[in-house]
Image 1 (tube, rainbow, N blue to C red):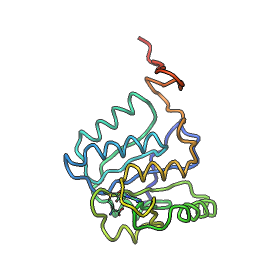
Image 2: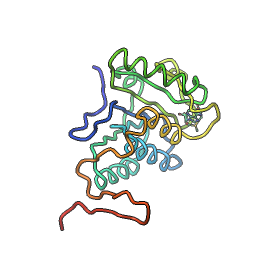
Image 3: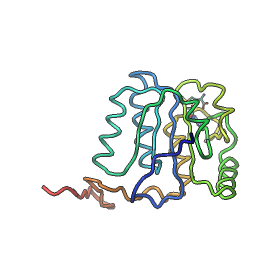
Image 4: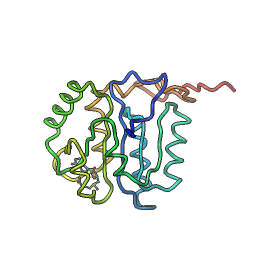
Length: 194
Ligand SMILES: C[S@@+](CC[C@H](N)C(=O)[O-])C[C@H]1O[C@@H](n2cnc3c(N)ncnc32)[C@H](O)[C@@H]1O
């Protein structure tokens, strides 16, 4: 059976359905990183995060942000990531410092998306060493520069380039709070009636 990212209802005029797969999660050590992967995925236009190792606390804290700030972002834990990747109905992009240059990788991804009229994209990021097979499973192994940095940074840069900034002020349905953009101070609208 083919997997596709969870459907987001009224929200989202974004062009792509993006799911993020986070490979590996070292208990305690990676808790904050995995939470940030979730927050960045959600805020930068992805619809779903799949974790291959996670404690309940990580999943709960991502869900808590979604409840407060809205949207239909889905987060789940999956044991068999290989099956998930192989069954994914769309383009699989693995972000790695060993990958091809960002601009050429993005150009190929865009060309394939247009050619196949495909909107589903799976973005894979690692924690520790990524299993060799992932490099084979991926349609594209793309680097965000060839220096080691962070999966959170790589993901943010990739998503922003994919959506060309359109994701940054996307509407999040059922939000309890919404920020009124302001050049000075903080303006926050409370959307829940007391
Ligand atoms: C601690 S880093 C490990 C670096 C790793 N050796 C690699 O393949 O990129 C964890 C994750 O961050 C992401 N990452 C780090 N640097 C990157 C870069 N320059 N380009 C793309 N992704 C990067 C990758 O997804 C990687 O699996």
